[in-house]
Length: 82
Length: 407
Image (cartoon, rainbow over all chains, first blue to last red; front, side, top):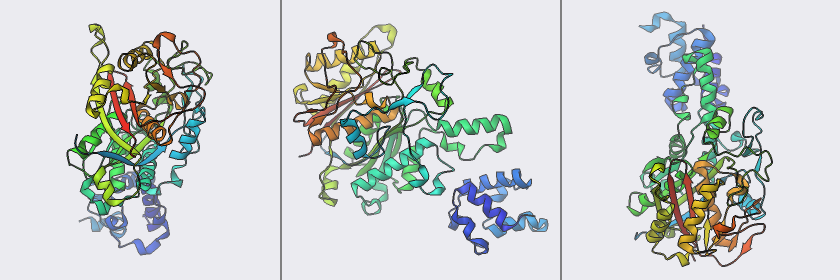
């Protein structure tokens, strides 16, 4: 299981944007692109998810996950992957 | 060239100052910016002195988002660019995002960042290497980050020519404007590579001074010349089409860039003379000037006897014995690779503005045969209208820029 706080912590470290942490639940459905997280931030995030939580999101998959909620669902609800 | 090109903004990051004013005051005062390396223990290395920037806290100057993806060199470059654009009081959006470009020089890239990621690669594995390594190491990254940060989408480029590259960037930016491809360019160069891996790369030149006393380590044109001290930092400029600049601001520019040339030395085994004299002649021709129009030369000041002799020869043959005042501000900060030439251009422009030549420090015993008028000990006050800045890079690069005061 991955929760939003854990995801935000990683996004914050990978992007250098500390404000991400302050946004809490409001952030769930906002698109990464609009939040200013580019493809490199997401690649770095997928690497960190692997190291810290042994969560594997392939590069070509994370590219298509547009919001924090989409990432959480991919990780926590295996059925959502199809 | 028919289009006048002017400098309307400057940003400095130097061992003796993190602003133009601080740098200039320190330079006129003959401040020593060379000291033992502080970031790591230099005792196992043959050379231990450097011109270091102290007290630079990137997070005080840049948004947090830029920090995970930048090496120290890029942070310094971004701050210098911010300051230069602020100084020029320019609104890029108003001028047009495609009318504004960036050409910088950098010779060593982001060493500290790369060092850390290489360590991760070999100790923790390839999947632990930061994705930002893909560009943070790269000598083109300063141009890219400045361009992204300020939305300058016009001509972009990077020039690499060791210590001469900074002047080449200025020359290329000027060409971009005179050919009508942009109205405004950010140009110059910044260098910083003083982590242990970067340091051994500097030492590979074989001409870094092994002296341990900052007062005797880097003595260009002196009988005791024993190599040079590497430095970090540099300068970035806002360069504009003069007419375009006049249209948007009443402020007087720092000066005009009226001449530029670059030459390459013949292969050493040919025994043919260095190309420095030719660079000097070509820059004068480009500016449409005779040698007697030049009031000041900011020398490359290699600090290596045979290179000093070559530079003195070139100056003597063009200007005559003791024919022009020679200035060596590098004696205070060391040789800044791509940052060196641009920092010397800052020095030249401010010398023209204030009619004063800063002194070379530490040099006490200039080789008589050189017959050069090296300004030492104290600043010299005299009327100055035009200056020639020289830079030479290991491998055979010679570059010359002529700057003129704008009345």
